[in-house]
Length: 264
Image 1: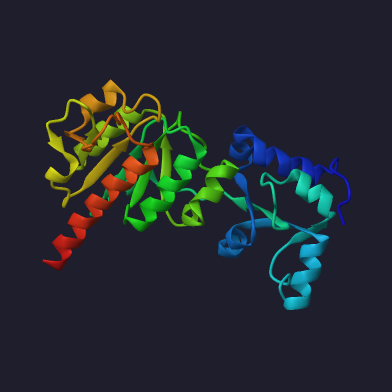
Image 2: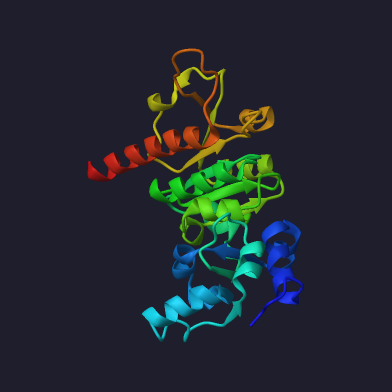
């Protein structure tokens, strides 16, 4: 049993939680909580870390619970101090990072892509990834300046969608937009100069929706490359919407139209 925070495994666990550089060099990340753990494919699980109390309780409920994966028992205080959450559930695990092929995402016959430019807030990123799964998005293309998708706050906010939503980071976001257009994908960007509202456009073919930075929106470079500019109507004195909210509105309009096309 691990009883000290100076243990090398605990130090590595903390580094994976706190540093994107460590996560990227090891191609691993940390999950917390029972739900995320039980949604993890065993082939991607590196090792679990459980508190004494969690181990005792689970063993009592199901004697075979710990038979199928590698784990370490850790003193409750040590694991709680290492965890990113305020009230940890007693289990953390190191998991292999999933990887996806960029070309496969942009050449998909029914590409329905979400394009994230410099989305920095972990909560927004997690919510967007979760909503993308619900709205039938086929892949997410992310600029390199965006928040790390394996940030523990992002991971928790995805509620498991991280395991099911294909995504890639790109070095040149605007260049990627150009390449997508060459693949027949219509790129839509929310912009104040747009003539049409988002629900006045047609999204039944291959589609890409750009969501911009929380503070600055979509860059002018990306806007110029977009096929169409769109806007979300707003009443009152509201100037803009939260990135996660705007993404949800646009994704579900695309989803609605694609569903209606299938029905008809």
